Length: 550
Image 1 (cartoon, helix red, strand yellow):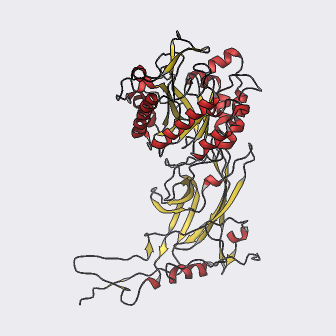
Image 2 (cartoon, helix red, strand yellow; image 1 turned 90 degrees about the vertical axis):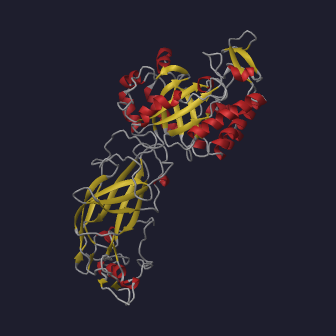
Image 3 (cartoon, helix red, strand yellow; image 1 turned 180 degrees about the vertical axis):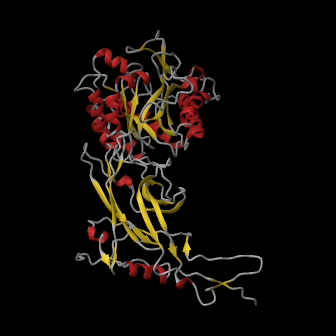
C-alpha cells in the first residue's frame, strides 16, 4: 500500500532516536506530537515501514447504559428537608441508598437552631452521624442551613434574638404580624450579622475542603433558605439584593475550597425579575446555581429560570430540585417527562429527589434510567487505535476519539490514560495524555454529542541512551559487599503479551472517573485489549560491573 503521509516515522528511526540520543531528543517537528489535535491520516497506523508491518488494533466500545457514580454529578437525596423527619428518617442506619442507581449525594437542609442550639456549641453530629454511612460507600454530602421556616418559630436560634438581634414576627403566607407565631431576623442587623459570621466561620473550619462534601448552599436568607421573603417579612428587591451580596461575601470569605451554591430565587424567581447585576456578581465569585421545587406548577410554568442557568452551567454546576413528589401528584402537576426535559434545559449536573426515596424510585424507574444517561457528564470512548505490537522503548501513536454524552461539562476535568498490566494484574506501564483534558469536551443534544479526536505519543519503558554516559561512567562502580546495577530500561520492563486498560483521571494516572465500559478492574480502569511488547531492536545501554580501585 502506498504511503501517502510523509510524516510517518519508521520503527528503525524511532529506535535510533530513543536508543542513541540524549534525553532531550524528541521525534522530529514534522510529526504529530502528543497533545496536538489533528485530522489523523489512518495510514499512520497501518504503514509498512522497513518491511516491518505495523498491525493496528481498533476498538469501538459500546456504552453499557449503566448508571455512574462520579464526582460533581448525580442524584441527590434529601436526608433533612427543612423538617428533620423528611426524608431520611425511614431509612435504616445501614441503608446507604446503594439500591438507588446514580445516587451520589445526601442533602441535609436544616434550621440553624439545630446546628447551634447554644451559642458557640455546634451540634456537628446532626450532620456527621448520618453522613458516615454514605461516605463509607463513596457518596458525598451537601448542606444548607436556613434561618426562616414555616414549621418552627426559632429557625434562627432564640439566643440570637435574646442577644439583641432585631426581627419581625410573621404569619406564613400573610406577612409581618405582631401576633405571628414565626420569626424572621433582620438580615442586615449588626448583631445578627456578627452571630451569622461566627456560624459560617465554624462551618468552614469544620467542612471547607472536606472531600466528602459535594457543595454547600448559601441558605441563611429567606424562607426555607431560598432567598425570598414574600411569605414572611416581605422585603423589597433592593434590600434583598443587599442581603444576598453581603452573604455571598461572607461565605466566600471563609469557604476557600468547597463549591458554594446560590438559589435562583435570590437572584430572581422569574426571568422577568432576574437581577442581572447580582447574577454576574455570583458568577464572578465562582458560585453554582440551584433551582428549588420545579414542577410545582403545570407546563408551561413548570420552571422559570432555565435561561438564568444558561449563564452558570458553562462554568459551574447547576443543581435541580423537583417539588415534593407526593404534593405534585396530588395537585396534578407531576410530569416525569418534564423532569427529563428540565435536566436538558438546565444542563443539570445534580438532581434532587424531594420525597421518600423508596417510593419515588419504585414509581419512576423508567425515567430515572433515562435521566441517568444524560444527567451531568458521561464520557464515552467512541474509538481507539493502537499498534498490536511495539518494542520496548519505542515511540508509538494512539488515536482515540472521545465524547461527553451528558448535558453538563466535566468541570473538574480529567486526563485519558492507558495502563498495561501483566497476567497477575501487576502494572507494567502507565501512559497519561496530560495535554488533553476531558473538561474541554462539548455537550450536545441527545445522541448528537460532538466528538473529539486526539493523537497521543507513548512508549513502554525508556531505553538508556549512550549519550547519558562517558567512557568512565560506562563502567559501573561496584564495591565489595554491595551490588549496583543500572538497567538498560527504566523502569525494568520485560517482553511479553500484556492487557491494556483505559481510564480517565489525574495527571499521574490515578483513575478518578467511572466510564460506561465493561471489564472494570475495580479501580475504574477498563480492559480494551492486549498488546505485544517485544525486545528492542536497538538495545539500551547496560553498564558494566567493574570495581575501580583508586
